[in-house]
Length: 222
Image 1 (spheres, rainbow, N blue to C red):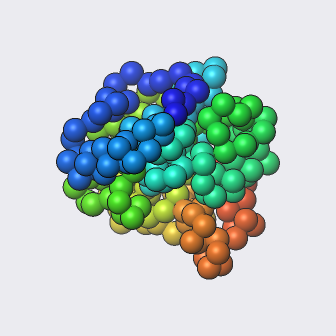
Image 2 (cartoon, rainbow, N blue to C red; image 1 turned 120 degrees about the vertical axis):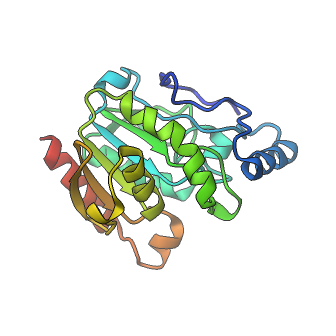
């Protein structure tokens, strides 16, 4: 299933058959054989149609879900996490249109972009430390390619810590906590628990808690 792509970021997009992480490549190939009509490739950053120069907010997630972005080719599209994320982005003016959990719906980002710390789907949603470190070569140029970027929202500790490392910031200088807010690397970083179904079903994260994170981000941007 090829995604309906927004503009891409040169130098920040893995090749379609990226071989850098052998375990992730093998898992990708396994799903290509099982579901040949799915996207089954590294998932690119989701940008507004107006391009990278309009982005002031970047949401950094963990990795594609096997039946979410790995299937559809667009971050947080096709599984529950996207329902909460995109509804919240719309509430705070970072998206318009209707999110219908498919890449050709009418949803568009406004002044925001969405990426993942790891671009390929990992088995059991658990990338290894080496895979996270390897994929940072795409996260760092993503940050560099957004000239108006001011605020980052990191979803989960892995995304948060990888973002700090991409910025050259020590983890102890901006520790992860839900709703935590730090000035680091020239940006405001607001961290959140990941909007996965596991976290919402167990009450670790409620919609109100998630909205409070984006309320902080919106307040920073004015």
